[in-house]
Image 1 (cartoon, rainbow, N blue to C red):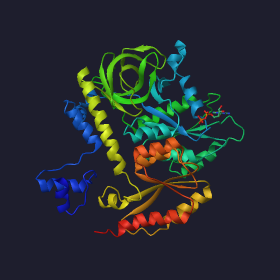
Image 2: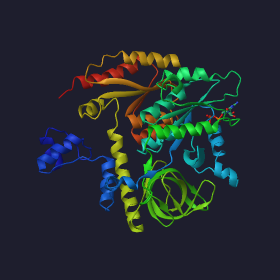
Image 3: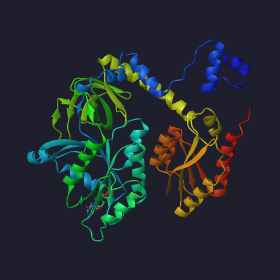
Image 4: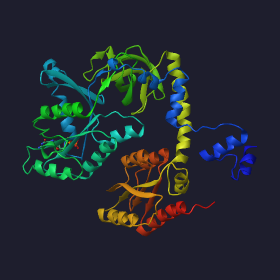
Length: 477
Ligand code: GDP
């Protein structure tokens, strides 16, 4: 019967076909219903509201006096081999309190160090996965975890492709950057050159009148790590108002999770607000359970974890994904019900997502729906010459006034998981020239509904993009 109604609305449909939002609205009107389209975020909020959990209202109802300062959460990014891992190790070993106690940190995905600044001792939380891949993966899941990014650049090498990629990601997320000019112990190190190079990307050193702090360090010799940590705190104080209410039910993000043979699901969570206690019933994505035990980065048991504290949590019945947010539920039963309903919603969304994303084929439709007004492209090729040629030709296409064509990322080499994550966040189409993706990358793209197109002749790529854009310029009714 629906098919008949649709037919009368001028829409050809088969019984199994999915409908776009406009058609749903028309269909609703015809049948006398008011149809509202909800995003997955809205849907999840409604789901929680049906359990009397209203996160936004809770936050809005918070008194300013309830908000207390919290530590910054920092991610270390930069080009491969510029010293990210070494730096994270060096920072870990500077912890003033742990140093005295002789603690040994374990890798749980995040750690906190305490830093002397003037007469104060202040904590900083570090995400222990270097690079922007984790950062982008979390953002793709809607998790905003990082307050500040440390951009590591080797002084003997200079600004490299992944340096630029990392700073683009941080800037896109509005995250302030502190630059760590690393390897100053090496012969040929030229820290001034780095300052000059990064100025071109909008990171102007304070000493040149800008507002980005540059700190010269050696991660290997552990030179000036204190200076770097101080710069992180000063940047946080100057640019951010980092406060959270510790006296409420905990909420936060899953940073890492795995299945441990002896202990079951082990998740490292970062509390963003409130305080998490042993015994709390929690839901993280579609995993749920009661916090059976918690541990800090030294393997010491924790009874509670407040804002910006990473904690390893035991007691979940299954393994959440990195980037899944978690909340404390009123009771075990509610926790399970929320998890179950999320799992069902997740399956449905997965299907819907595949159809929704931008592709060269559906570009006309998404543009018409007004969801986007730009065709974002990610270009990968087997040589920098090829990528440049491809980009030049694409940017020469006459796209008219209604739509813009933007190359948001380009690079040499195979299409990577990170490219797919970026395409997910920014609704981009990936164009590969003389390159192929690895199997798991293709699977990820398929799961996320990201359109990838591969060419061996530049002209064919131009032709397809042109055709996609032209379709939009001359809508056929
Ligand atoms: P990542 O790929 O950015 O995580 O880089 P790593 O931390 O693995 O470092 C890459 C290489 O550079 C390793 O061989 C490190 O020992 C070396 N390295 C890192 N920091 C320094 C430094 O400050 N000075 C010197 N001389 N070598 C460093």
